[in-house]
Image (tube, rainbow over all chains, first blue to last red; front, top):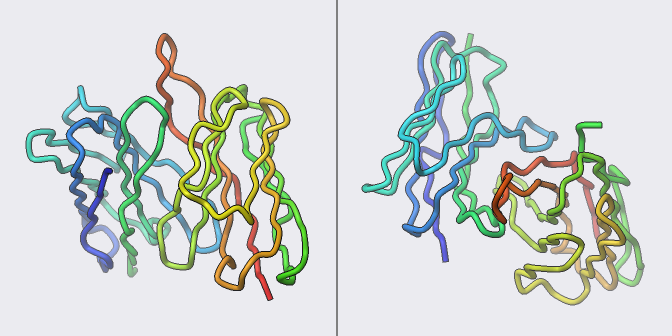
Length: 112
Length: 117
């Protein structure tokens, strides 16, 4: 089955700096890669996703890049703000049943 | 309505109790999911319903019994649970991608925090 590895497990950044989280996956048939943000005590919320026919996608301060050959994808957050502090999960899936395999998560702390 | 709702928010039960968790969505989604999430861990898939039929059971113990009465509702019936089953139980839903049998992003409910004594 699919295995997703996520690094780093914790990330501390100064407000205004950039944050990068990296994930690798094992199943070459995976073609959907979402990123979820989960604040303490709250539900996971989709912040951005990318499909395998696209190499990069951007939404304001958030961007995701995908390298299918190397089987890795990354989340980039620019101009970080304290409200970006949360746990971020990457995930991967094949299309058919929407079964998501999550990475272990990255605790991001943005200090003012 | 653009949300997935779950009840109850919190549940404390003994190992001999029977209880049910409920999930509801009115977004017309035809896939619904149950996940279990332990503290500081990612969500773990338990069950997937596609068009009200169970399509994936991730080898979940029989003390967890899912039910999908209609396209908007998903239940998880609990019986004879163990203390290690204490966790946040998340429901999610997604819709089929137009023109294919594949699914788009999953929308999560707020979860039920379950404690088994």
